[in-house]
Image (cartoon, rainbow, N blue to C red):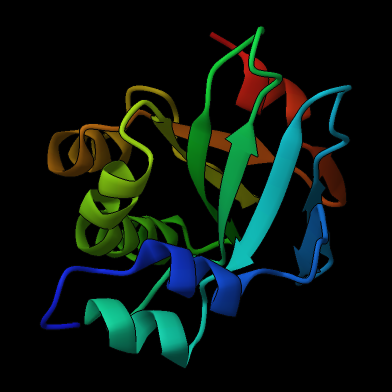
Length: 161
């Protein structure tokens, strides 16, 4: 991990997904259609730069930053993992990413709400599953799960109160 104070602005510049608001792998994709006045940025964090910076062995696929119209809404930082069927592995990746990076994002964006999402096909962990409970206990964030075999629009999920 970086010895000095984390420079989240520099890190965000390095990890930005080139102004994209969609991302896909393994036949599944997520996207956000921003509404008027809203700014949404996808950060590709499943790579060496992010892992080295935060001392992670594994990391989730994306961090999404939602900045609303200043007069309407709230800021969100969302951790997203897209997985085939291995929910346990996905939750481990999300947990480690949140635990290692959340304080950096909180310093940079103290008013942001934090969310986490697992997008997968197959049997997803139910709302009351031990896996989701453990994630909440270890991160303080409720884990949302979306089952899909194709595309998923995340805008409504990011905007819900």
